[in-house]
Length: 46
Image (cartoon, rainbow, N blue to C red; front, side, top):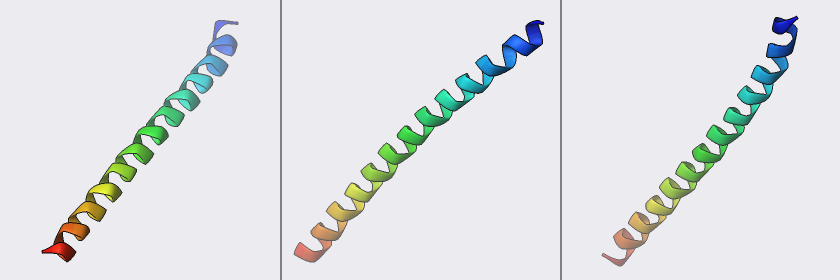
């Protein structure tokens, strides 16, 4: 009986952590994009 109960909990936890890591990835991606833009702007000014 326990195993039947454990799986959905684990699945939902995995989905939650996936969402979290997805958010982190998008944040890092946006930050790197911004950095690239800043570097490009500095190059253009220089």
